[in-house]
Image 1 (cartoon, rainbow, N blue to C red):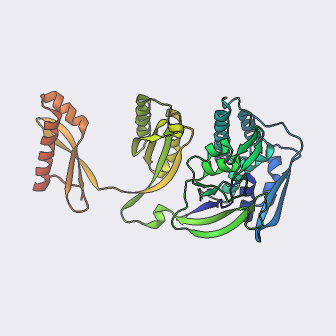
Image 2: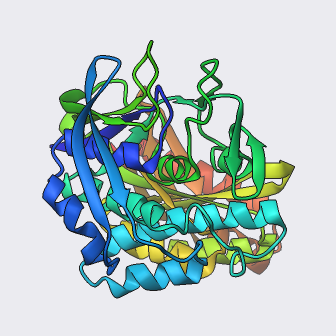
Image 3: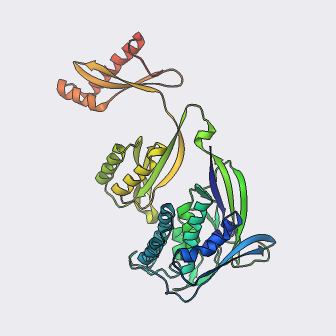
Length: 406
């Protein structure tokens, strides 16, 4: 099996209208895009989709003709607008909300206010709403399952915004770009990345493109600026990539890895969350120390799961942690064959897990809960009980009376 992926190539930055143009260039129906304002209840908005040249390269330019609108909107107003459009698929609605929330969080931090109170000037405008919903929905309509992004060229100099003249990248844009690969310049480019474009890349992208893929279609979405010596455009490549199952790695099991970062939960609550996620069917749950933005210590929750269990585990992660995002990637696991047996130690049963390494060596591991119970009952130390269980299991394996995992 293969997956359809999209690779963003922001060699001249990224903005929402550039993404829309590139999606049209690779097959998105322009009439669907023209109808999007009406779908979202944005009356009087006209969408202009046309072919242009950028330094000799053909590209698609998307522009909006917008009647007078409110001067920006709050996040709650944007959410109500999108929620009122019943045609928007739930996955699109969820991802679009993550984009708007990310921008609101960074704007709130920059201006020293809360997410609920921050007034989104550029992003709350009609064109930005159409950029976000249209970009996410457009990828969905093209059958894209995963998105990757190359290094982002951010530009240089200064830009005039609602709060005055700001350096490029603008403060909120730079914060949104945290964790992504960026490059300054080229000289004299000015602003090449908008908050909307940065947030779309941050939320949608899983990182660098796969080492191998089969390109199926590519196209360019034009930016507004024109440079004489280079194309100001975003390239999008639609491609197919082999899934783990299709690669047919011998003895490997196709699984999913869910990851979420948390920096506002104490250890005991994180441990309780991990227990709840294990109980929901996770194959493994680990908590890893990590460093968040501004040097804040945090914890990365990683959950190994069967693909069919991903939706319920995503819901469990959101229910039991304070994270606002879960990343899902596909992994291949090579696990040793193993079997569980019960060994008698001083009249008490101790479960032991028997596995065998590729070079033929047997491994025996007693289950700690049984070891602890036997130790408490006999007055022996846990170490002594465990060693007794391992010796007994090894002897039975050597005699051939205890089947191992081969």
